[in-house]
Image 1: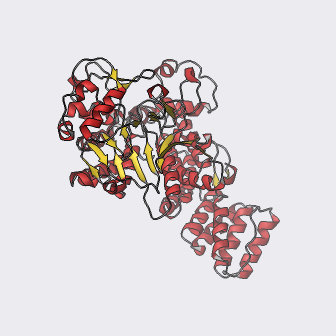
Image 2: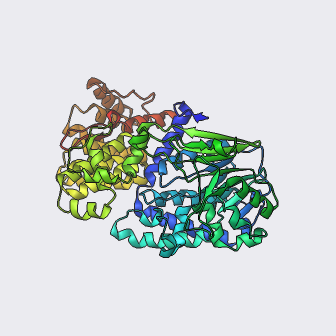
Image 3: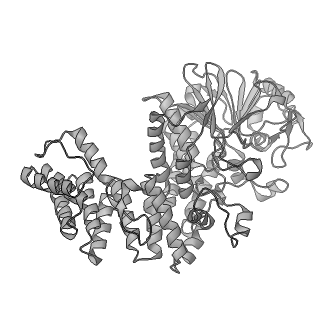
Amino acid sequence: MTVDLTEPRAKLILERVRQRVAMWGDTGRTLHRAFAAVQAANQLVGSGPGAMGAEFRPIGRRVLRLNEISEEEAFWIIGDVRGDVLALETVLAFIDEATGRGRSPQIVFLGDLAAGTLGDAACLAIALERFAAAPSRTIFIAGDRELALTLENEKATDDRRPRGLADMPVPDALQNSLRNLVRAISELVEKIPVAAICPDGMLLAHSALPRESILAAIENAQTLESQPNVLRAFAFDRLHPRESQVIPSAISGEGPAKPEDFAKSLQSLNRIFEIPVVRMVRGHDAAPEGHRWFRNYGDGVLLTITTMADELPIEIGGSRRKPSVARLKSKRLRVVRFEIPESIAIVAQQIFPNQPAVTHKENSSATPPQTSAPEPFSLAMDSEPNLTKLSTTVVSTNDLQAIKIHFERGVRLLAASAWTGARQAFQEAANSDKNAHECLMNEAVACLSLGLPGHQDALRLCRGLLQSDAANAWVHFNMGVSYLTNERNPIEAGRAFRAATQSVPQFADAWWALGLAFSLRGDRRGAAEALAKAAEYGCQLSMPSSLVGTIPARELTSIFEALRSRVLYHPALTSPPVPLSQA
């Protein structure tokens, strides 16, 4: 089942997702939130075995046996995310919508939230904050990228250690914060489950299960729980893509390093846990289509779920992976897929660019190939993984190319209404050139669009611009919009709009906004005169229904939204300002 994201209701949800993704663009703040979420999860898990997934009445600690799953409610299974903030926020937003208000959804995370990308800390924070908010209905299963943080170096001699949170690219100033987060998550990973068995016999794990030869020496569940080398097999061992076999990993388990029968391994789990285990849902394998049924294991026996939505390699067709989740309801297992629109995917890529391929870096001196994304976006992706180099080398030398990269990234984020990400991009551009008035003006637009939280910053930026150019009508207008829509202050707003009309007498939007300010002050005559001027100069905004300050609240809200769309920004460096609605 594929979710239609073109419906009006879905578009509203995606707009909230867009804002949430932009909110995680501040790396320092995100690391802090992730650390706090890990600490909260550590306390909850340390309080006893029933702290995680208590409503399912679990038995065990590292391998949970769930006694109850409501058949009336959906039970959601989220696969590998690997630092894809957009995919995680999207699927959680629609899961919440499907669950309804007043009730937290039932969710299982199958591990691998991180993969050495810029979005790693954000994904950890999102998942663990959700666990802390609803621990009784949330289960977090460790993947190989989480468990690898707890291994000594000699444990990974034969198999390459998977990239994880420790490989997240951050500036030097945030390295200590990242190390603290890695230590905290390592402590948590030692406590959380590596697998769960549902009442209908469905095994949930990140990758595989221990082989029959290893399980033969284990008598019961308590013995299995006490053997960490065997437990690692749920995350590190592999399943053969064509044969029904478990492939051992050098990191987990002991014994002969040869594949063994998958069905016999399931039977061994039946014996140990004294419950039937007949099918499995896992993550680990990044299926291009977002999920994959392994038919050679039997009909409906093995399902792989991939929740990330990254770009696929050219050799397997390119395009974007459709993030998928599994839904169990009334004992029926279904796959739900999301086809994320390219417009919002590009926004996420601007904030959390993917790790560039080696071949792309090697060919960076050559002319970049033409793609659907503009050239500055490609250059920004080249620079982002080494954030320290970007801030200390490119910025300090006032590289005009760096200014252009950040500025155009901010413009795209403005057009996508991703205000927080746009603000950060313009800050980076302004750091490259303190005299870039266009960067400061656009940052002010992003701040005032954030609403009341960004109001004071918008005023500060506008006042700074007016110190060097007191007659700048565009800055006066934007300041007035922030005063009026965020602070509801028609007096200060009126002064700003009056200054704008004095500098540019034909400024139609400023006359209209001045008329609105007069109306809210109860000055009917002043409002009528200003609005008449606005109509004379061809203002595109509609006239309010009242001129004496009694505009209905609903109409006033729509008026303020329309006014915000007319704030002026620079679409390019050295270009004249245009209304934000033309972005």
